[in-house]
Length: 210
Length: 210
DNA sequence: GTCTATAAGAGGATAGAC
DNA sequence: GTCTATCCTCTTATAGAC
Image (cartoon, rainbow over all chains, first blue to last red; front, side, top):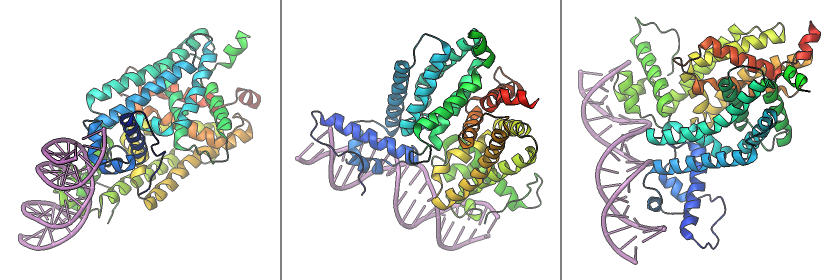
């Protein structure tokens, strides 16, 4: 068997330790095989525990999925709110959002992936919970863009469509980014930022504001 | 074992008829539940046949997935090449590509979805085949953008990053488009086209070309 | 080519010892 | 809280009749 990740050292709380290992293994295996494709036997072995030990932490497989997705959606939201000012010039806030989103998606590719690719495996009630978190995130960008359109720094249009477009554009980096590739992380972020900025900014509006 | 060709409703060939029903049911069920989540019992019942009849058309479940994905990747490529001129002004070809991609993704959401979300379920050899088809499609857009950058109608930059960005932006429409929503298909295409155009076009380059 | 019946095993989840 | 052993269902795939 192949072991991966840090092996447990002495911890003051062995229960939290086990939980952390289950989460780490679940994240990796769902990323690799998908939720439906991940067997609990494999999950347990990767977490270094017996299969039935899983049920000391989660009542069902679905509960594990919900835990992982909510955990990371909440972290995404919290991190975004720390990184993006809630007031100020729309262009500055837009650039802060774009930069945050890019770096977060590069660094936490697996978390992001399961948060949007495993939604169809969620039972309706859980799907609803996650969707609300997701909408808060989208809403934040949409409000920035809407304000930018109002003040004239961005071209007028449907703010909602623009927000979805930009999010999809930037998130796409997870599908091909390779840390060992020829382009550095900083270089790629620059390229994406340029594209995302040009997509919504009104050059005339910028010129007039000067 | 896999056959292809025109499928008539009143078919003189009942074998093709059954195959078409399997494909239709498979497309729908994989879209709904994912490849791993789709059981062959359900597939057979949705196709209106007995479960073991599937094995008269495919040797394995994997073979069905490969068939569906290759079928639709080939159709995507063929349709694109018909819709997008292979020569002419880069801006014209770019707009033709964007329009084709948007309409195709709205109209054939399920096909597109399985072609990019079930790649991880493909065995290595099959994954390779599909990836090559996919790259041909991406390559087509990349060449248009590279030429646009050369002629100056598009801002200079990494053509590959730009192509991936635009493809991701436009493909994102499948995640939220709703035919019953407040925005018409034409209106949404306009919005997306505006964003995708602004993202890469050099306003100065356009002005100078006049 | 399609059916009924079944094989062989993997799936999620549980019982009870420690 | 974790383990070993087990239950029962569902899975993919095959056998053989028609």
